[in-house]
Image 1 (spheres, one colour):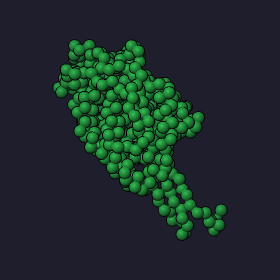
Image 2 (cartoon, helix red, strand yellow):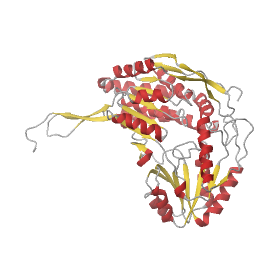
Image 3 (cartoon, helix red, strand yellow):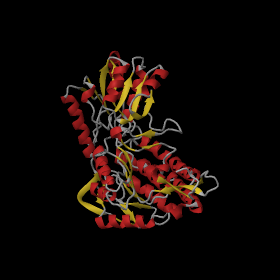
Image 4 (cartoon, helix red, strand yellow):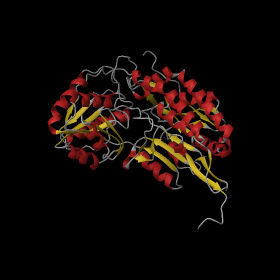
Length: 485
């Protein structure tokens, strides 16, 4: 914990590393202490243009055929090997930028090599050219990389999300320009360093840093053919409007206030353990975490007691402290937003429970919080932190109606001992994924896939679909006068 500074972020444009522009009088802060960890940086308009043009010039379908596909898979596997040697660097950097405890960031970083190798395996299994049955005529279905792709990633998954999105687009054959969050650029830089060291071909991957104007320049440019973004709804809407001008392919994961339905037969300990895990393991800073908890009325008091007892027993501390259960909120703007959201719940009549003991470190620390006694209709804003709200309902059916009255569209949770009934109710919740009796991060199964429903975004994701998101279909073949029309 003695060294809490990070290297100054730099850009990787047109196959060369180069200094990013320093933002005057602005710093990225250690969320544990509010001390600087490096200068804030951005990218000039000229360098953004240079990156876009290089991606545009580097795009070519022929480069990703046959032998080139195998070469790309081997490069991806070498990148995974390099990442494997830098897991501790990634874990520490993630902890210093997201505020998530190093014990948890280490688990995330350890999974990265498997995720990267999975993209190489999918690349090898994805047929780029398929001969179709056409009565002897030559008809082929091609999987074509969509083209230059902008990937914009958030601060809450500073290494995993850039790596997962980038490797999927690279495997598809799309030249990638990655812009990580201005609040957490350092982990993405380690990821890019690994891919560059692995020997990517020219133009395959570039890295630019900066704020909203850099993202807007990328997503609004007609040479960019696809955009993958994880983040807030306001930025997502701006990207969607920009993309509509030339009908880009969009993958937008925007989140929401995910409901948790606590059925009449729910086990209190199982429910409390699941909700606590969901609201603390990444400091609650994940778009699929539980938010609005709809509880059968007779279970509200025992569940509240179980949650507050568990929160009081947590160790809230420095994100690099191996013994900490919960770290600080990632950055000053989000800390201010969370405090404001809690006060809004209080002003609407909620009782705020914050039993966690805070460390005397001066950082952006917040006790895991439970807001109770409020009508569910008054708690729709995404919280995105170690905060949930409890709302009494009189039946399982009422819980389902309340969940679907303002659906998050991304994730939901159901807690109940009758698993058949819990799964049945879960299938009726308007979300892309519904977890029963738990709140893990990993995919439920190998064949999982979820759509971002409603305001949760555009598109979806799943472990078997990562590369395909960045490919388009093209059928080419010999026509025939014998076809009926």
